[in-house]
Image (cartoon, rainbow, N blue to C red; front, side):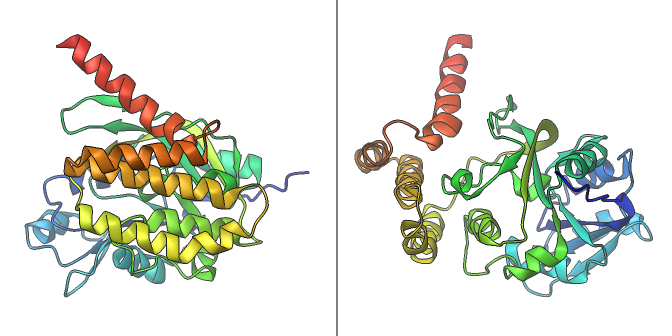
Amino acid sequence: MLVPLIVHPSEISVVIPTYNRAHCIMRALESVFAQSLAPGEIIVVDDASRDDTAAVLAPYAGRIRVIRHETNAGASAARNTGIAAAQGTWVAFLDSDDAWRPDKLARQLAFMDAHGVNVCCTNCDLIWPDGQVEPAYRPYPPRMEIGHYVWGCFTCPGSTLIARRDLIGAVGGYDLRYPRYEDWDLFLRLADHPDVVLGFLNDHLADVWRDSAANAALVDKGLDLMVDDHLERLSQRPGALGRSFRAAIAFARSSNETSRGRYLPAVWHLVESFALAPVRNEAFRIILWPFLKRKCLGTMLR
């Protein structure tokens, strides 16, 4: 029998990390102010922006709390700063270039109460650099587990996650070593915690702007850290989790090589991924297949 959590919006602290996003942070903030259920507090962590972020935030004085880093430390550090400063029992995250739908908090909190989950993401719409809007394909059940997350962290937690603050602290928060894939690492640790109940609301309640540019060397470093931190532990667990994780890592390496224009190693890693998981390759099903459909549709419309 599910035990309702009775999450009240007044107990939620919204954490918005930002760096040089003066041009779009108003959109994120206004989407929070427009919520049908208002959160208890809004914390913006300015990670040493060098643009006009401070001036853009100034008119919101009294409605938000701004914490500024003196030196740029990265998104993970900014989120950890927000978590440490939060006074609410629950923390909701929103990236400063994204936005929530007006009923996001209301529907997500009702879902969490109904399903008894204490770490929850929702679905979203992806907005690509060319302006194309793509409803994200995330075929997850209301209750998730580590077997879903070995394939990657595709649930957009940077802008849809609500979690009990003490549980994030219990697993050590965001790991500052990770320049990429910090969300994937966090969720693998959360999924292993005995008190965490993971949930996913398959309603599109956020707009997530995607940047196609990525530093390939930082992606490599993040993937290497993922292997070092998680492969041995996952390989010792039942259910072929280690093999699925290796397939996911190979898939991510293939994508990274493609971004470099190195197509031969990209194909090699993709073949490796399918050799490890030829039947239920979730990275292909959730990421590659929608990508191919989007590219084919774009070609047909030209």
